[in-house]
Image 1 (cartoon, one colour):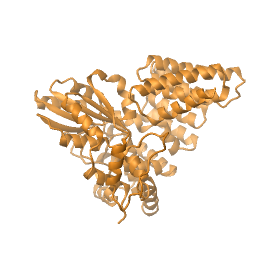
Image 2: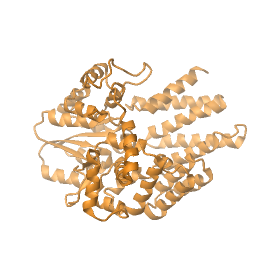
Image 3: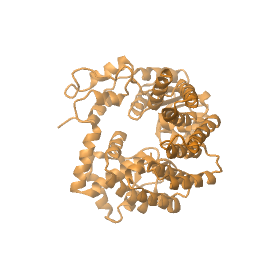
Length: 485
C-alpha cells in the first residue's frame, strides 16, 4: 500500500523529535510564564502542544482543551477550586473571553496555541504583558536535518531539499512536502474528489461540507447532517452508512467544544491538512452546489458556535471560487443578508466579492451600506472600502485627475486605519500592496513617499514577531523598488 504525506506526518507524530521550540517552551513554563504559541497551518503546533502536555513536569493538574468556551472556562475554574493547573488551549482565539478569564486566575498557568493570522486578528484584545509569545513556524538547520532523517527511507528524497537562500526557512509540513517522493496531498485528494463524483456524488458533497464547516473552525453535528441531507434521506441509519463509506477520511469529533448536555454525535475531516487539501482542490461546480445546499437547508440555529462559524463562512475569496459567475454570487450574498445573517459583515464580504468580480458599481453600494450601518467606526470595513476604491481605479488612465484623487483617498483611509486601529498589521499589508502598485503606475515623489511609509510600517510589524510570508514578500519588493530609484 502506498505511503501518503499524511502517513509521513503520523510517523513524525509518533516518533517526532523534539525541536528547539519544545525546550524553549518547557523552560518558559517551568519559569512561570504564560505562553502564546503561533505558527502557520501544519507547522506542528498541536503536536508540540501534546508533547509539552505529556512531557513537562508540573506540580498540579494538567489540562488540554480545544475550542474552549467561557462556560467551560468558568467550569474549569470552579472545579479546580484554587488547585494549581497548567492549561493548554488549542485554537484559543475562538473565544477570547474564555482565554482571558483563565489568564486572570493566579492558580492557572496558561499556554495558548493558534494560527498566526487568527492571532493577529484578536491580538489587540490581549494584554501582552501577561504572556510570552513564540512563533514556531520556521525550523533551524539542526531540526531540518533531524526531521529529514526521520522521514521513512522508502519515500524520502535522496538528498535534503531546502528553500533558496532568499526564501524563508521551511515549516514542518513544507519540509515534508519538499523531501518526499510520493504524490502531494492536494493531488491525491483531487483524484479522490473525481472518483467520488463519478461513483457516488452524495459522498463528495458530505466530504466537502465537512471540510467547509471545518474551515470555519467548528464541527458538524448530526443535526446539521440531517438537515443538509434532507432531500436525499431522512434515515439516520443511512446517514451513518454514508459516513462509514467515507472511511478514514472522516473522524468523530470529541473535543471540548461540545456542550456537556449535548448527546448527539459530531464529525470532522480526519485532519486539518485533509480539509485544506479538499477545499483547495474541489471544483467550483461542486463547491457551489454544497454551499447553496448547506445554506438553504441548515439553519444558523443548528450550527454549533455560529458566532465562530460566521467569521469565515461567507469569505469573499471562497465565494469567488464557488461562484465564478457574479450574478449567481450576487444572489447568494443577497440571500445571506436578508435571510441568514443580516449584518454589516455579510454586506462587507459581498462587496469584496463583487469587487473581485470587477462589479464595482454594486460593490460600492454594498460597502456604503456596511459603512452606514457601522457609522464608519469599524476599521475592517473602512479597510475594505479602501480596497474597493483602489481596485476600481488602479487600472484606469492615470492622467485623469479624478483617478489619482481616488487612489490617494484610498491610501489616506488606510493611513487613518493604521494610526487608529490596534490591528496595525492588517492595514499595513494592504497599504504595502497598494503602495507598490501605485508606484508602478506613477513613479513620482508621491509614490516614493508611500513606499517609504510602507517600509517603515512593515518593518515595525516584523519587529513585533510577525513572520508572515506576505510581510517578507512586500518588504523584499518595496526595498527593491526603493534601491532602484
